[in-house]
Image (tube, rainbow, N blue to C red):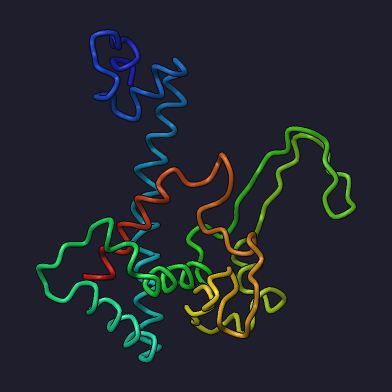
Length: 206
């Protein structure tokens, strides 16, 4: 990292920069670059494997859901040599719903924290600047207050209804947009979200 900090970035084309090099060039802070690089490496290993294992486990416990997913994948990827590409991603709504439902039941990160940058009122409570606030994904996404049959694996709850609005066909419930945030939210959300989702889709489809 020290050698990288001394690197002459003027001699390298920006499109050839690594993520660490881009951070160093923009911030000049080697400590920040090291922390972000470690986050990308460490958070990207166990998280994806756990999410895949959770999805496979629930599919094994729900043969009807497994069969429904199999039929979808058989239509999109009819033989072992079929390529999984960008067009494929637009044709696998049930696989995406299965992954999302598994992450609802077993969020890899059980909570998401923020440090308040100013005094704030939350639910009628005065919360001073500097307070660490935790949003407990595991609790909220498995609460009967927000989900019917939260202990059941029901990918259908994430599918859009026939009229294309964001209301699942299961019980005709509209899901609150903040009750399941396995990748966090806002500027501090997971940097590798799209990569992780694609990785899971490819792994599970194979």
